Length: 476
Image (cartoon, rainbow, N blue to C red; front, side, top):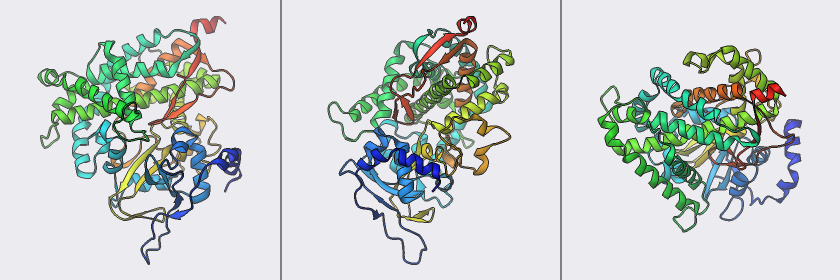
């Protein structure tokens, strides 16, 4: 083990010594003569397993501890079930490329979030997934993306301009409202923001529902709130389908109502509602996390903030165009480094649909698996000084991510690679283009946002910045 990795673990030794470990056991005995090793691990606390460690504690500390104990593949108990955990680019490559079709999405995702995001494209497997994704791809072609970018930027500029400078501007909260408004306008064609608070709460409740320890519809439980959120979202989208089918428009909702595969296959109303709920959640949740954490690191590193500002000012445009997305290399490095440190989708959930192996360990059919993108992108066996904010690691001269094709994989890979990744990239850059042109900001020395881990790291305090208009900053 590297000395740095050992140091990380030693720093958390006090907390680790208090963690409960049940006896170490193999997950299952490998077939005789297979040459495979068993997966070792422990369940953790009775009933809870390691849920508190992975969801409420420090998931990085926990991942480092498991890696030290068991290597890249181990088993544990969490979220009411036994599962295998995996870290590292080799594991991520094997799982995402899925060459022997051993890993399915549907089983474990349905267990976790099926009641809230049922039949979303991520929750489908193999031929059915390909079929639905092929139809949806029509909504993310280059001409569509160009249209979305043109539609979103006036709203982005206007909303960012309305942000109020102050000593505690909560950028996560503001970014969440902005990305929801953009998603509602660009994806739904809904310019009426009066119901966006209720829609936003419904999405939040649905996401949090999947993290429930008590996974039942009981009074006061987050599972129940998630189910209510889902019903509100269903009503919202179903009510609009007749008008969308009758009058085609340029928003994604309308595109899905009229999209067809090359064979002429189309979506049912139920398909459209399921896909809209999932895509809307993914679109604004991941962009919000990335924007907020980019703002945090730029507040801590004013030299990088100024480099972004000069790059955007040199572009000489109020609005970026689609071809400009590749002309902002400094912004791109900062975005990539933020996505490395704080992957907005923290991991991949799979279930073995047949006996298989992972990194030389035997995985029997029916095994549930969580592969941690979050930990894999922050560990020293694969990254140099991984906890340091260092965008230059993505510079053409270094390209540290090129050591392995799955070193940096915040959007997943293979057949299930995020279909909206180019939309997310252009939205983030369009917002940041406005931020650095209109404001200067900082964070107090030593401040680090308290994080809750849902789809990714969510600041529980709204992530307060010391925000000043650029005019005020220049005058000072």
